[in-house]
Structures are given as C-alpha cells and as structure tokens.
Image 1 (cartoon, rainbow, N blue to C red):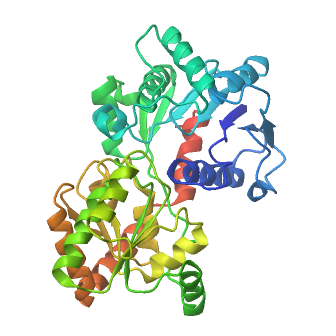
Image 2 (cartoon, rainbow, N blue to C red; image 1 turned 60 degrees about the horizontal axis):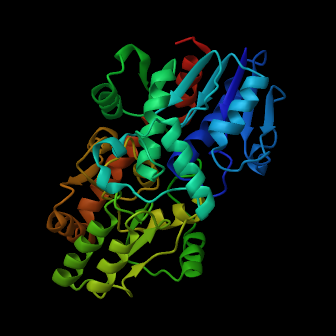
Length: 399
C-alpha cells in the first residue's frame, strides 16, 4: 500500500499543538508500520534532523517548486496527480484539490464556525500583490462565498475538506459532536482518537540546578504562574491578565505571570490590559519555548493556567500534568473531557473566580498537592503510541 502523509506541519522548527500531533504520529508510525507499505512524507523543505533514521520504507518528498503560497492546494495536488497514492493522511483540516483514492483527515476543532469574533478578518497572503491574487482567486473559486481572511480560509478549507474525506479523525467527543452538529457528517465517518503525552520528555525533574539554569537564562524568578499558548483572543489571554490583576490587587503576593507563546489575533488587547493595570513588570513574555525549557518552567510553576474560550483538545493540559504542575482551566468546549477531575475548572468569563483560584494555589500547599496527584493519575490515559496505533488502523482501513 502507498500511504501519503502531509508532513509539512510536522517539519516546522517551533511546533505547537497540530505540529506536535503530526510529529509524534510520524515518529510512532515509523515503529509500527508494515515494512511492505510505502510511506511518502510531503514537506515544503528538507526533513529536519529529528527525522533521521526513519525506516527505508519512509520516503522524503520535498515539494519546493513555486508558488510558495497555497502549498497544499497547488504543489501537493500536482504531486498526487503525477504520483498517486492509495490513501492520503492529512493531520490538519486542509486537503489538496487532488487526493488519493482514500483520504483520512484530522479535524482538531471548529472554533471558527462557533466564535467568528475570535478570528482575524484581515486578508492573508503577506505582500499586497499576493493578497490581491489570493483574494481574487478565492472569490472566483468559491463563487463569491468566501474571501481570503483567516476566518474565511478556515471555513472554506474545512467545509471543502470534510465533504471529501473518506474518514475523519477527531481528538475528543466534544469535537465529534461539533462536527456532526455543524456539518451534518454521519457519525460512522468519524473516529475519536485522543492525543498523547510523552512522559520521557514531560516529567518531574529531580535536578534542581538544570531547572534553575533555565530560569536564570530567561531571568525568571519564583514564584510564578504559567500560561502556554498563542497570546490571542481565542485563548482568552486578555482575560487571564485581568484575573491576574485582581489577584495582585487583592493579595499583594510576589507571584509573576509567565505568558509563553507568540502573539496572535487580538494581542493588542493583551498588551493594553497589561499596561492598563500597570503589570509590565509582573508579566513576563518569553516567546515560544522549546520543550526542554518548557518542562523546567512547568516543574517550578505554582500553577498552570489554561483559560481558552474554545479548544478541540488542549495538549498543554497533559504536558502540565505530566510535569506535576497543578492545572487550572476554563470549563468550556473539550477541556472538561480532557482534564477530567485533574484540573480546577472555572467559568471562562469569570475573572474573579479565576483570581480566587490563583489565590488558593498560591497559599494552600495541600490544594496544590492534591491537584498535582490527580494530574499524575490522569495522564496515564493519554499515550502517543496508542494514538498512533488507532490512527494507523483508520489509515490502512483496518479499523
């Protein structure tokens, strides 16, 4: 069997949720794949060093010819037209115009269908000429139904892909129900397969000096709370800043807040909230953190806070639990399903409720210890090898 995999997201340097999901599946597939099957990994650039040593039946396919934009729709389509495969696996929600005989698609979330206000209305494409070309092309191709904004692109790509995919994989029952409700997809075409966490990477660290070296490098001192994710409206980062402001005003405790991640849509609101509450010296934004650094910070955090408005799964929840960080998260979307009883949940709009939880985390050792232990128990349900085994069964038609 010839199996094609869109590995473009797995091959980026600074990986987040979808990219890590793609990366771990490829790594785990390489351990369990039938050696008689041939796997073709499609990327924009040469495979990164972490993929060296893949089995001989895994073939790198670098699709680097122009144009640079619309890589999936144009370059990947051309490759599949010239050299078709038996099944194509796309670990995100954008399919090429030309696919394999069967296509398996992963839908992580459809927040853009539920909460339009959390997504940018600006045209994508970078430079002005490219934006104009993309805008005109999109209008023509979609018969005027969609423009070229981030929101429109997500909606068009998903609606196009979800009708063509042979099988759809989702990371939670919440996302499964969303897909059925919004798109009317038959339940038999959808498989729920939970993500995993690598406990060889994310774990409690015994070496205090290694942790301290990472903190010193970033000029971070304890105590602190930690948030990981894009700094944007969807993640409710501005709401977290408001809650932290209440916490600081009411307690006068020395804790800082670490916002680890890159700015996204709505970052101006985050920055303005920080300035409005005079928190510039109390909130640290170190940018994207590689796993080694993230693990160190999670190990020493008073608590990990995940305040999103909408999530299809939420990998940082598992990473925090695996490192022994007490978890606080919003009671919305897939988060209660993933977190179970291993997190303290709060209503997303209730900044005062979150502030009270932060205060308890900062002052109650038994409370932190209890959340920590519940997290350790919870993460054993989420394994990348199990995720890969179930996913490969869907791809090969064995499921």
